[in-house]
Amino acid sequence: MSDIQDQFKANFVGIVIADPKLKPIGSSRHLLELFIVTSANVKKDEKGNPFGAHMWGTAGDANDEAQIMYGKINKLDKIRILGDLLVEEWEDRESGKRRRDIKLKIGSIEILRSANAMQGQLPQASPGAEGEPVAEDDIPF
Image (cartoon, rainbow, N blue to C red; front, side, top):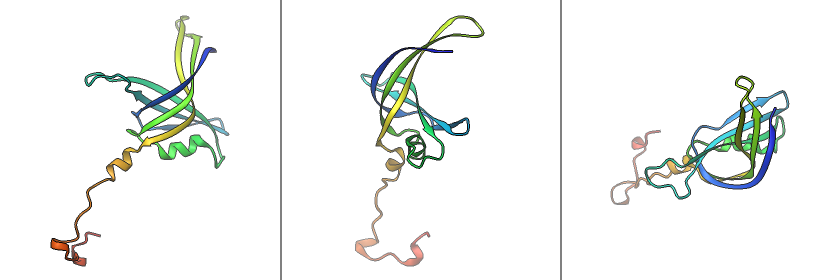
């Protein structure tokens, strides 16, 4: 059993470094899990600060933000997370040692830059030489 020791408001901007996961918890809840890396004051050869973040949701709720964001967020998206940093402590069952972990509980998410949108920004092809229309047979679909 864990004890929540402290709770702090958090505002993180980072890059999603793994595909989001939506895990069912029982029959009526689910948990959105994200892993992000923040890059404040990171030099070119450094990796940044990785964080795990989670958001609870309710199954079957059409307005459930966890479900909605799971369908929108992709690996390499740049996002802003507003939420709470939770410092938890517990006793490890196997070793008996006291453990401590920091978790980011998501209150809201904003997608600042979509990796998919960036891939879709390809240069537009010109119609033909000197503005001539392209023949229907030249269109690949």
